[in-house]
Image (tube, rainbow, N blue to C red; front, side):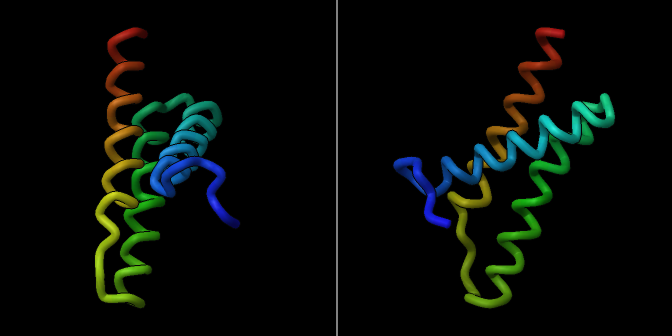
Length: 78
């Protein structure tokens, strides 16, 4: 599926946030949600690295940073 957003890493952020929100809602644990959203992309990018022998840094760092920031902001607000 092609990403409808201007940059592909924006779709990575959206998917990581959806995973984070779903896990947070199901478990009530925001940290678990943040880790699940982040580690999904760590695993995905590692798998691509094994195949292509190169790292997709924007595709890895964008969702991890976005989920981390969202979690920290949520902890400050709640």
